[in-house]
Image (cartoon, rainbow, N blue to C red):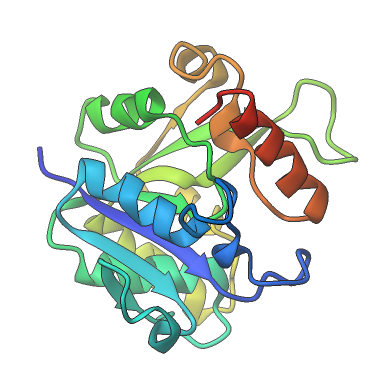
Length: 211
């Protein structure tokens, strides 16, 4: 079944201190992070949509660019804007700052039996206050159906900004760690880039042969 692909790219990078979308993790002559993610998305779909705040700065990107549906609405507003223009009923949504997403896990998400409104992954919760063995939803390594749009827009209209807010309002399935570890044993897909130390970690993994 054909599936669109959404990359939520925002643009603030407050914790990083610079625009992480322009990081060159694969060397000075390698692609920028956002370019890399678009290339990955093109492997699985002929309909790649990127949600970001500054489309004019990325006019050469081989994807359709959309702005957030509601100003200052965060990633949820970017997801809404992207789903609204997707050509296909379902879309794989990925955060721009997940550079090590594994192809096998993406393929497993796309192969999961449909229909559903959303299929999200569950990852270990590494928050400082999280109980031991707690799990957290990763809403930007997930598949969404266009039927999610009313719930997402309802959240945005009432001021809710968390990506997980609409998931309790729709038919959501979850891919638990015991399932996705079959495709990504080390959880590389969930390593995101928020701080400079994250960049150093990812570069080390890449240098050691990681994706």
